[in-house]
Picture 1 (cartoon, rainbow, N blue to C red):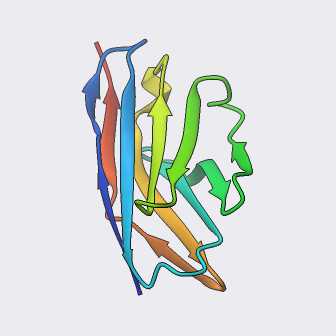
Picture 2 (tube, rainbow, N blue to C red):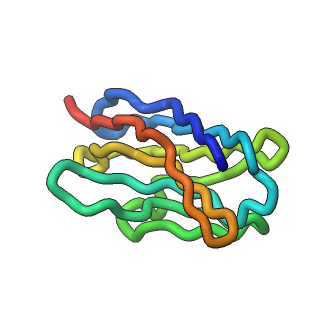
Length: 115
């Protein structure tokens, strides 16, 4: 089992920034990839950003150039730096870890962009 603890969500004005963190613990060996997904009200969950164990990243088109994913392997933590936030970024953000054939999810953290 892998346990994930997220932090960093909140309310910010359009154009602002937030940094999400997700710390993994438990059976964290052989993690293939870590990432962030989000689900806005009334919409399907979507991948926001993902980073593999060797540092390769991919992003949703809607966040490219604004969001940056990174990971600290020593701390088993993945980060999502979100800049130039828009109201459309409002959602619950979920941390995701892929380990072999298994997927693990955090509890979610609310991000609200509003003036």
